[in-house]
Length: 94
Image (spheres, rainbow, N blue to C red):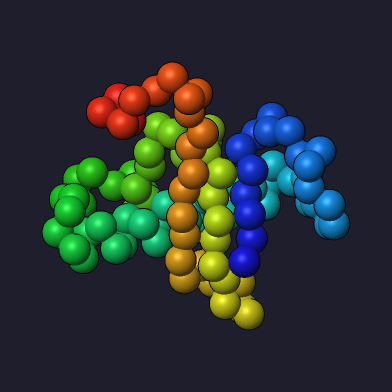
């Protein structure tokens, strides 16, 4: 598993190895968006015209944390997105 932090996130609470690489971050976000696009398309949730270069790009991707499940060869096989909101945001506003 790999945890991708949004750019500019505070990483002080984390211990252990932390890698800073805009290139790797961009590659992993792109692969995650391609996986999401494939799944949404096969489920019929979106049309192919809603993909950008086979990727399902969401405006909140750059501001979100992403937990990626990876195979040993580096292929992304699962992902979850977390976008933190202030505690004043109500469910219907999400």
